[in-house]
Length: 284
Image (cartoon, rainbow, N blue to C red):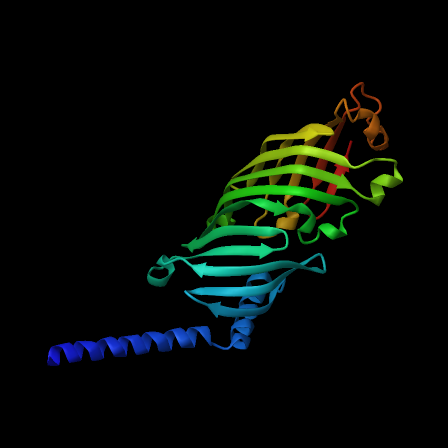
């Protein structure tokens, strides 16, 4: 009987300690969590990212609300994020977490890990609404449609830093419209399918199979010489071949004429993009 009583008391003590830990975790002051998170985000992003609030959540997650990013002096609200550390992060030297970004535009789950001075990133989603993405409202045209994206990237910090991996991007049922187009007599443009495969090898991003289908048809090729420490300085060398479909040629004639496409029988135009990400230069 004494053995059973001792075991029962031990179970009670363990249960009490567990409940105390859970209570402490759940009720840890959100103000302190938010302050610490913003300190860390500010250091990592050089002041570009911040959250309105943050709190701990069971079973072992960090919830960030109203995550904002400063882009060219304008703060964009990305939405919310839930960060759940990998189990290996609790016992090993590597660090990693599953992060789910969510907002009116949809959800984007990613898995992020660091090890030995480098990092890896995997993720993607099929249901992102273009019209609700942060920053789209400042564009001169209205854009609606669905975005599918998947990434598998790794970065090694040795030798100045090297990024490698792949990115798949696909857009479906895209509609481009707005007053800017109406001013030139152009009706809404429908793009049924846009897809591109990007490969990255030692900071050289190469456009693989790229095609555009819909009222505008086309293909793309080229490279971007990435500068991981300063993405805005990455060098562009891209070429797009665009032409209106037979059905939309009359409708899009004003638009293509503006960019000098009238000289070709198929009304096509070749767009060359040079310069940097921050300061792209276009030529026809």
